[in-house]
Structures are given as C-alpha cells and as structure tokens.
Image 1 (tube, rainbow, N blue to C red):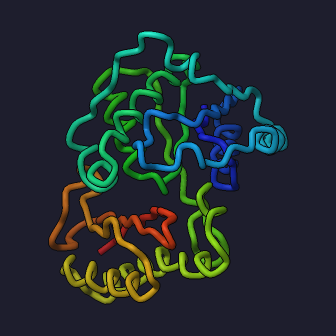
Image 2 (image 1 turned 30 degrees about the vertical axis):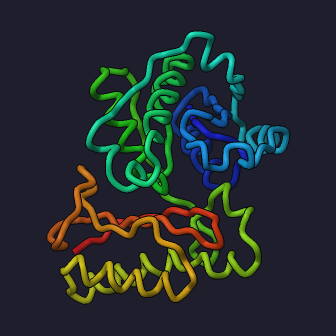
Length: 255
C-alpha cells in the first residue's frame, strides 16, 4: 500500500514503483485526511486533482486505487483516536498540535481496511514514518513499513504537493531548505561537531532568504531528541515558511 493525500508528484510515484518491484499487488490510497489539519491550516485549499492522480497511478501500473469518503473513514459516532507519545511531541508535533493524532489514527484505519503486507512512506516526512513505526510496533500491527528516499527537483528542492502554491520568486527562494541541509553536511564533513553552531549557520541562511522558521533542529534519528554534539548519525530537520507556504525537509548528517 502507498498512502497519499493526492496531488501526486514524482515522489509519490517513486513509492508506487518501489511497491511494484517488491509486491504482487499495489494499492494506492488517496484521502485528504481532515483530522491531521488544525483549524487554521489549509485543508480547504489542499490541492485535489483526482483524475490526474488516477492517470498517473495507472501509468505506473497501480493495481487498485482506494478513494474513501469522509463518511467511510470516520463513520457516525467515531470517537477512537491514537495518541503516540514522545516520538510525536517535538518538531512537527510541537508546531502542529494534534497533527500526529490524526495521522496515526487514519494510517491505522488504512492498514486495517487494506491489510497490506508492506506500506511505503517517503523520507521527507521522516517524523511521520517514525510515528507510524511506533504505532504499529506498540499495537502489534502485522505490516512492514518501508521508507524510500526523498525525490527532489533538479535544484534540490524536495518534491511536495504544496510546491504548486509557490510564486516564481518564492520557488527560487525555497531552495534554501536544501541549501541549509547542504551547508550542515559540509560543516560536519569538515569536522564541525557543535550542533548549535550548525543550527546558527542554517538559520542565518534561511533568514537571508526571507524564510520564516518553524524549527531548525539536529536530533537523534531514533528518538528525535535534540543533540548538542554530532557524535553519531544525526537528523537535520527544518520546517520553513516561504511567503506563507510551509515546507519541510531533512537529511542525515554522518560524522
């Protein structure tokens, strides 16, 4: 199964191709999940391109496309929610309270509805994949989670359904997320181990590009706890708004 919210791009299709390589049957799920959006977020504006999405999935050889309605996912009287705990609290969890409650609940429902052997997620949503792994481990769900590499534009910007909102000027400046990660990589490769110094350099770059910072963090990739020293593989993660459009990205820094 490849779970998506539609508005598909090459990042989603790379997950479909990975599933096709591994599995006999590939099911794509398209559902814009209302429970993972806060009241002030862009649920009503989230791009919905169902027929184009189905055409793209068909071109990749997807066997089934599941497009449930809100009434089918959240039937009358629905009152059960998944609270994941510490892995869901920092980063996106701090900036978007309730987000992972909605994500974990809807993904568990997906897994129960489709009952796949494997489910595919992208590394761009690193914390989301960690939350799902925690959920299925704690609740003994018989599915394997596979996380596939982030797919990028030629200039390094991670592919995202929200990229379509960017004006031409904002699109040029949005590459600062990738540039920030590249600076972090180069600093670590040159021997820098102080997390605060690396974060400060990334912050200066983002501010110079006119970005509004939700977070720039260096964390343990297993626990998402903040680190002060790059002594082991470390996740650099950032969430930035460019002209009000919120984008996320991440990379593993190898000391």
